[in-house]
Image (cartoon, rainbow, N blue to C red):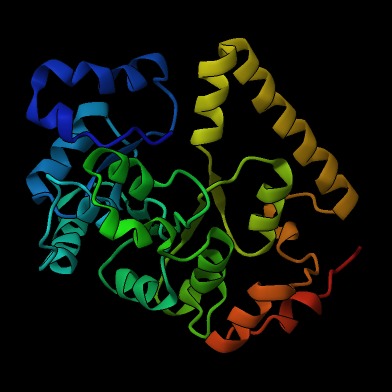
Length: 274
């Protein structure tokens, strides 16, 4: 579980407990701290210590900041800052977009900075530009509502571009997120190279609209559906899901062809002992 941005808790100690509760109720769980990639390394460490985090998530939210009246306007030096944070904190660092996707080139740069994981955060889920523009009324920036790379394309960019990140630049973890709501989307993401997927909005809406029991049922149903699909695919684990042939068509295929991503290798994958 990744908590939300801890900026409020770092700035106001009275709010720190609203983050610490994640560890209190889940003492054995895997928790990710969360701060902006622009914070000082000392604050990044404080966020980790606040919830005794197992990893640190640095979020990139340039579009959101630019649509906020009070948002940041300068991002100079963020790359160097990410590198310093990776060296300063004692836990693995994951960099996450918040709805606009990460390209192959950005992923390669992040890997070179020492990042241990990338959360693609593609467009298709929560649209922070729309949320912020509803507050600021800066309609001249309305085009930012559709800015970015889709979740599927960002995952392909990161995991299957002409540069093989897993081998060439030591990124051991790729998380797919951005509008994932169904078990079929989870399986597709895993088949395209994700090690894990992130779900937020879908779970929160279920909790708010129907309560905790309904959310538990939803999660249990997802687990059951994944087991069914893995059985039908002959996959005993996530690694074997990645061996299942996948046919990519339409706009996604056109994008991949223009970007030098070989879609045939997905369609012509061969399973051993199937």
